[in-house]
Structure formats: C-alpha cells, structure tokens
Image (tube, rainbow, N blue to C red; front, side, top):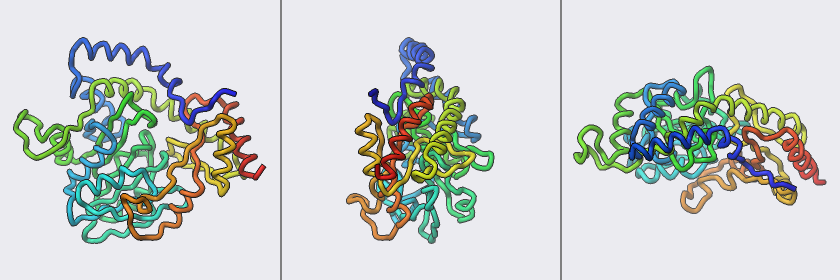
Length: 355
C-alpha cells in the first residue's frame, strides 16, 4: 500500500513550480542573491498580509526570536516567560542572550501558554501559537509586559479579526519548509509596528550596519533572508489563504471521523492547523498501527523543555507532561484526499480502542 507522508509538499509545489523557476532565472541573470528586490518585495507583501508596518526577513525562525528579544534589550539578569511545551528554539534564544527562561504550564485544551506571573525581572513573554492555534493574546496583553509572538506554526492564523504576528510588540515566524508558508530552505521574519525595534533588527541582521557599510553600530549577526527563499515565499504567499482553507476543511473531516475515539484539537475560527495532533493514552499503539499500515505520524513533543538535559529546570507542568505522553500528529496538508483521511481514521479508531 502507498505510503502516506505526514506532509506532502509535492502538491503545493506543482502549483508554484513554473512561477518560482521563472523567478529563480531572474535572480541568476541579475547576480543579486542577498537583500535584493525579491526580499524587499516579500517584506512589503508580508507586512501588508499580516497588517503591520514592518516585516524584516532573517535567516531562520530561531534568529527571528533571537533578534526580537535582543531588540527589546533582553540579557543577563532578565527573565523571559515561555511555555514548557514548545520547540526548543523558543528557550535556546533566551539562554544565548544570557537571560533566564521561566517556564509556564500550558492550557489543557489549546496547549498554548497558560497562567503566567511576571516579576520585576520579566523582560518579555513569548506566547507560542502552537500547531496553528492562537494563544490567548487578550489575556496576556493585560500583563503589562512586552509580548513576543512565536508564530512559527501560525502564519495566516487570526484572533478577533487580526492576524497573529500583529498582536505583540515584536513578533516572529519561521519559513522552514514544513511550515504552512514554507521556503525551499531556511528563513524567518520579524513583524512589528515599533519603528525603533524594526530599525534595530535591520541593523542586527546585517553585521551591525544599515546605511554605512563596513561601519557597524553594534556587534551583530549575519542573518539575512536570501533572494531565492524570498522568491519562493512570494509565490506561496499568493496561494496561502486557499491552502489554509483546504487545511481547515481537512481538519473538520478528521474531527467527524475521529469523534469519540481520541481527543481531537480544539476548534477555533482562526486556527490554521499547522499540524493535526490527536491525543490518546494509547498513543504508542496508534503510532505502531499507523506505521504498520505505511502511514507516517510523529510525536510533537516527546518532552517538556525543562525536563531536557540542556534546559533542566525545576517545576511541575502537569498539562504539558500529559500532552507529552498522549500527543500524536497524523497526516494533514493541502490536497490530502478524503479517502486517505478515512483510511487513516479507521486505523486510529481501531488502535485507540485496543483492537
């Protein structure tokens, strides 16, 4: 039986291939590969799509978080609050800057950051819009602390009529190839309405200079989105809303097919389903059954961040720890066929029942 991948990018790429190949020929003909016209155009288009004044292309989503926190002045003696259940880069950038990550448990349903209690040392809070579900930004905005959205999994998601990545002070996304808006390599972006922060990030991404080349204002980084990735992302951004609608429709089919068998993701008007993650106490048995049927699945995430060796920290995070034991991502992507979903759901239902 044919393998079902967790994510099939070939369907998307068939739509954009000719357009991207034409753009790549133009890049080669111009011999302009770094911070050229595609990067400038994509920054303008992405800022317009999200609804902010500034979008700054950088080399990765991790760099986006790093530069955003540095632009806010995070460093030794500061604390940054973040969820215990997230990808490791959310924590590692805090440590790289010499600040201290302080972990919070997640909401039992959304798995986004739960209750947080800032202190005078809190420089920022990083809400992660996990798996494409927006965090509770309304509640977090009352804390009086800068919010740095980690929207690596939420490009196109919305909350209260506004796009995620426009709701915090300085906000970050990733264009890793598997993202809803993914490049053909690595890349990331920072979004903000803060003019001073935007200028600082542009300086930090490019060796410490903006206007006067070879005269750095600060010790900075080499973190620039390249022309090739910007060309790919421009083509994909034009189709993103249609692909998102396809994801949402596919998630709705799974909800019906899996009702009563496993715990399905919470529904939300702005959810973009970067991944469709089910939860079941029989997670390992379900994964084994899917593997035997040549269907991919994956555990996101097998450990909380503070339970890992590199980021060991005290604390009890019962909701996050339960998710680590129960969660499993099953195939979902634009273009997945209903009959494929029916096959997958049948395997899941049987294994979850102990059959």
